[in-house]
Length: 147
View 1 (cartoon, one colour):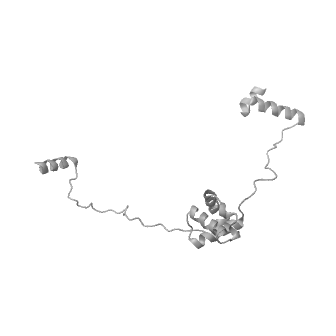
View 2 (cartoon, rainbow, N blue to C red):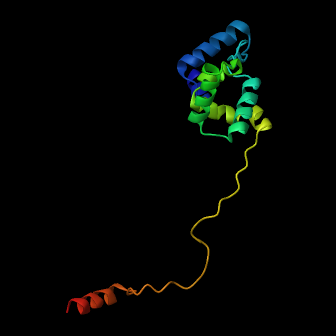
């Protein structure tokens, strides 16, 4: 019976033995999987995301390392205690905060498509550069120049 249950469920022999023992002891199987009562504590709050959005609005969304340096400077040089948590944030987590819903609700950065310098989709005749078009004619042109 255990071999049949193992093949149909994919559980290992040890898992099935444990489950059968639990079923015989309690009269049934219950899911005991639930989130912990005390989950991960949030280090950065919604106020931090709002402060980051305000800083980005003032400085036109600089790069992550530059923004981190601005926040460190605000705390260490200008003693602005609002930046106490954000001053020592990692650059990677700074980008995570920028992607959070609280930040995006306060600041949405839209960049228009920039024009390209090269007209990619434009149809026109090729320019005349004076160079031969094929390899065979290139070889004959070289021979004429040398001869």
